[in-house]
Image (cartoon, rainbow, N blue to C red; front, side, top):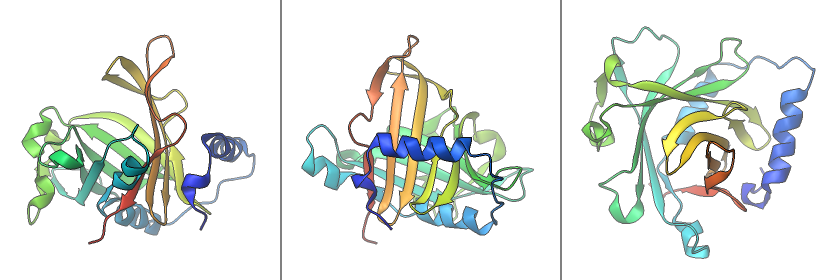
Length: 214
């Protein structure tokens, strides 16, 4: 499997564009791909190596764990809780989300449905509990869906073309391209203002999350 950080955003964009515009039928995939994506995401990872090489980046740790959601009518997917925090302040995450990982309705992609809890701080440290569990009403608002497909890179996917709504540091729209690979995850997370100008996020290189030794 190739080293992902050697790929430029342009090359990855070409790959995504060609895969999206292909007229060949997209083959169905099995539920085992949901398990594979979940296993990938639930290994702790951070950006420390990147921050040490490039002062434009800071060390960020991502912690993700499976959770039980009571009262959910969903039958085939897996729920996760995810925190992102500066490595110097792990106890104070700046981003908290619930994820629902499942197959798309046509079973050609793995979808990650992102929910924003109404009171995020309520769930800080949830992954440290022996059997983390929440009620379905605590999931909050569905804010984005990322579609992932198996590839020679591992799993590659993105937000919808129009992006997802956001209200963060001047941005009203967020786009992301995600690559799950043999060393962790690369993300091109970008925020755009009402005029379509990028106001934050990845530019020359992606955010490079690498798995931590467990």
